[in-house]
Amino acid sequence: MKRVVITGAGTVNPLGHTVDQTLAAMREGVCGIGPLALRDIERLQIKIGGQVKEFDEASRFSRQQITLYDRFTQFTMAAAAEAVSQSGLSFDGALAARTGVVLGTAAGGVSTWDENYRAVYEEGKNRVHPFVVPRLMNNAAAAHVSMEWNLQGPSFTVSTACASSNHAMAQAFAMVRSGMAPAMLTGGSESMLCFGGIKAWEGLRVMSRDACRPFSLGRNGMVQGEGAGIFVFEEYEHARARGADILCEVAGASMTSDASDIVMPSRDGAARAMAGALVDAQINGDRVGYINAHGTGTAANDKTECAAVGDVFGAHATQLMISSTKSMHGHLIGGTGAVELLACIMALRDGVIAPTISYLAPDPECALDVVPNVARMAQVDVALSNAFAFGGMNAVLALRRI
Amino acid sequence: MSTEEKVIQIIAEQALLEVSDVRLDSTLESLGIDSMALVESIFAIEEAFDITVPFNANTPGDTDFDISSVASIVAGVERLRAQQRTT
Image (tube, rainbow over all chains, first blue to last red; front, side, top):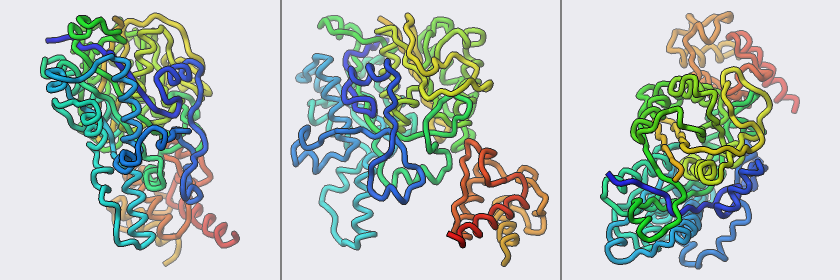
């Protein structure tokens, strides 16, 4: 089995258009959630979200690219460019032939669906643009990454709702570890902050109208965000041989299914995923210093996740730190695990623990050190990143400082 | 059909019960209405009466709309309909 390391990272999200901007915002506890600016907002009850602001598509992409790039693809391409640039890799020859792309998204080109349904249903048009299908398809982002960087190995898109990115990264990790690929681009993207995307979530009655307050007393639901996180996963010796700057090691991963309920989370499924990631990484639980929580800010997730942490870590559960950066960037749905992995890298590499902001008061059902409101300095050797999706599909990654 | 009859019909349908099994003093819990059936019931009530019910599944008790019994739901619906007529 090969060791797997991360040698490049890129992102676009409500906290920034680069990794540096994002980590600076996380350190400062900046809130990227605010009033939504979108068409027909007056017909929505939920009027807040984590929107990516000042993302100028015209200056980043050609007219032909914009014709083919839904917003979720645009975020992906910007993040992938940053990640590949940082890695220093150029893909040609055997490396290009074997390197692929596995990305997560829950819903792909939602804005493209939304705009074109409007055109045919609301405006009564009988004709849509010829590239609607290649623009909205869930694998569009992964396909454009493969084309832009000449990645000719195994590429596909994983869709497991709010765990999509983590499942994608777990898969990319397995592919590099097994020797199937020397490197993989992986992560995820989501952009459903349009009328139809928010209206669908509004229907579920789990959205907050004021703030995302994970683990806090008085929390009242989740807040949607948008954006992408993309990483270069690379085989350790390959990275070392070329003197690459290694951000951290991906030490283990685990995927479990609750096999119980389509929306209510399971303590057992979450616990088995966290414990499984530790077993896979061959790391004792007491070495884990930080968990980037799924931490959606719903009543159900947060208490279930805390109980599961207690089950896995026992007495160590109250010694480790666990925070939810969704409080700052919102829930990026299929892209969320990728952006949240940045907080794990910051903990391991910089010794900075991102806070859980908008925190009001302790909830006895979430009695862990959730790093309320203010970032903290601490040396962390091992971090976990949790994602627990609707459908009861869970994926947890274990990261190690290197 | 009165507001009460319609609310009872909606709740009975969600609980997979006969209308006669749903009484005004029944609690949703006693009828076997879980959180998903509750959200569906509220949606059905909103559609039937063309009202918007203030309800967040994270904080079901933290609202003016009292869901502690069938009678309280009927009263809440009547209040929302009255408010709607005056606005």
